[in-house]
Length: 287
Image (cartoon, rainbow, N blue to C red):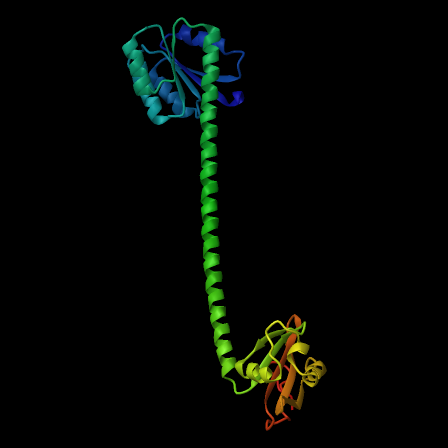
């Protein structure tokens, strides 16, 4: 940090300024000097940032209190130190209150004590800067977190709305299936019963009571199972089969989707159906 440290010394006595410059010859500080408050303000305008300002209290035209007050208003981060030979308590209090002075060092000063005071002032400056950066980073992180959380909430809301719509579609689909005057039974690619409408449920109950999740062999008579086994993608099978003493026109077809076979569908109704029309795939018919 020392390579980036600039210190401004303000005093109306030239020999004091020379002494201060000699004091910091061994330090990696850039030392600026001014013989008045106005000159000091002009240097501060030209050189930024300036980490520490050391100023005498008693100066013509602009005293230390007025000077530090101006510095505090325009460059609040700069550390301000009063260096004066006048032990005027009221003046020191005014400088501390109005100019937000960090430390008061009396003249004549002790070189080692002054060096330590300046080093601590520089350390304080960079500590304040680091804390500010951390605060800004935390604010940015909190903003990004809030923005991400908001985006996530929006996605969840969109997904929830989509799922609600899909559930509504499924409910309507089930209602439509249940109003069909024929049986519809669906099995997944593993041969597990995953769908059936009311017509199929009533008809199958006359053969054997079955539930969703059971295998095709547990749900259907053997000759119905054999019909499904004959079905192939692009080629459906139709046949008149009996179920609990009643004749049904039974159609079996494999469902095809982009990822491959997804299951089998069995459609059946009374035996007076037309056997020459058989849906071979969803969305297709075969004569």
